[in-house]
Image 1 (spheres, helix red, strand yellow):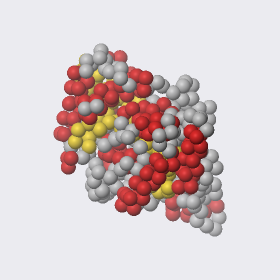
Image 2 (cartoon, helix red, strand yellow):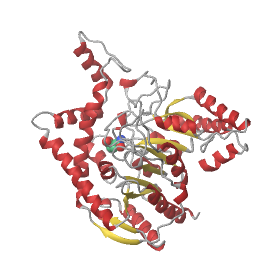
Image 3 (spheres, protein in one colour):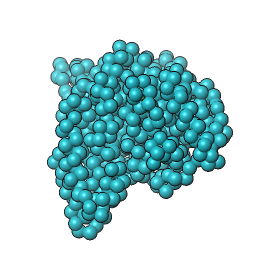
Image 4 (spheres, helix red, strand yellow):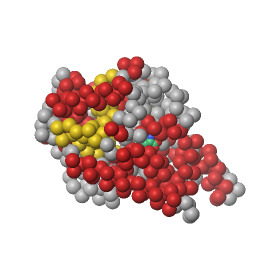
Length: 473
Ligand code: GLN
């Protein structure tokens, strides 16, 4: 059953939130040792939340649009009193004194947060292999990665442990694991979802978004978490978008751009899937044009200066004083150094060094400054494209889920996993990935739909057109 149907059943009193939770806990119990999806399952907290929902139904109240629906949370989202690690030793044992706005909104809508999912350390990676606590396995093929950095959240939905999950997307960390696990994942417009309580990686790029098994469930979850929040100064001053109301609008009369750069280097099966999806949109009444946006090729280089630069500043707060781990030293500087040396993994250290270098006097203009100019060019290039078309289509990833270890010794090969997703983050725009067809080893392929800021209603409607053909419903 979909999250929508489950919530309706709970609201009508046909199912209890507690029974949905027990089913979710059983599914976690069955496969978590094998797949390593959850770092922490908050059984007491989840049971209390589910009981509250059932009590409200018993009193004749409406617990909300996600009544009783179990949800998994990426472990870079702060939840009061619940261990939050970012998959890093440096935060081990830390329990946040406050909850992210998205979690408050979920609970306000009756959802039941079940636990915290594995990720690449500080969300830096594309496979969950940089987690200090060991990788997550892809539920569809446990010899392969689930993608990352939100690999645990994607795997939770793909394994049927929870109907919904939240992730964060800085350069592709929702869309890429969604593609590799065969589910729907959305990177909303920058500012649409509050980042309050999301542990910062690169603040000008980070955005929280939904994972779900189908397009309508993803729309419902985004409606619940979106909308202005005064606690985040970059939050858009507007209410959540109406997505479900426009889900069946179709694409008749819409102009779709098939982007050459969003297929370059992709596996042939993936190119074929995107072309087939484009054909479906054309059959549904859209006009399709082929486009080239050469600036997209610069995305990866700009991202690997801007994101590490912001990360090097954001991660300065882990000093052995305020959070988690402390390794003693003779004085404060020695303590800071010993803590950070022991607490951060290799990829996080690489990013801090890259970012510190790019921001240092003498190199700032040549690296960080240049990257900001490229970012502006990217924004301009998208703007010109969106004068010609309403939305863009391309691949989400160059390949399907890859085997463990196949890219861990070559950072560049790993970084290339996000070559198609990064431009959207740099431009602050919206994009989603949905499963469409199968590739190598019969693994799912993700097709990516991209639109300008606030184009979510159109993106979801287009995704629904593709989903209907793909599933026959
Ligand atoms: N894989 C990219 C990186 O390593 C994107 C990560 C993300 O979106 N959090 O930076």
